Length: 222
Image (spheres, rainbow, N blue to C red):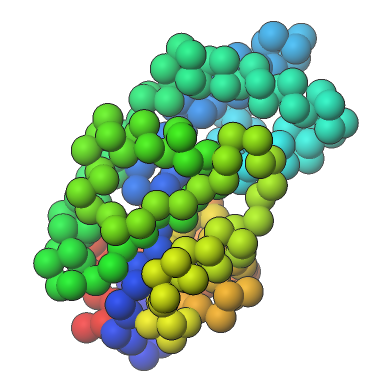
């Protein structure tokens, strides 16, 4: 944990899901390649496929492959064909140590929440399959029909529903979207470097803290 800033006693811990709670990269990358195969694209390098872990699918297909909106929507449909129907959604691992961190936060009386770009129905399936629901007081994510990538909107929704004061709230995630959303909402942010975003990306986005492993998150407020 980067200790350059003074520790604060946070009460509300908002967590991203993919790349923060679990490593969902394998299933996501396979499903992206599945969609691209169906659309006639050649096999893509892992370095490019990794960029799909975190942002919204519409944004990734649009900007990484310069797809027009209609084509990007078809790519998302094909992606979900493999991700949901072929159950690639469960091709993931919960990060080592994260359950212990979440349990300790709950034991300390903290309020914990999931704030993710992943559609709520998918998030619910993952939380049930991997027995994660017990660790969280609140879960939010977009509807399946919502292609937006506005993390700020999701964070604000969570804060309003939880009646969370900005000075008592921290957003924890592995990409610039989490950090930028936190800044827009006036709350602190932790960039986790064990996920899919780079240290450089998180630093440039303005993360208040950096955590190299899940256990570092317990140092907040010490």
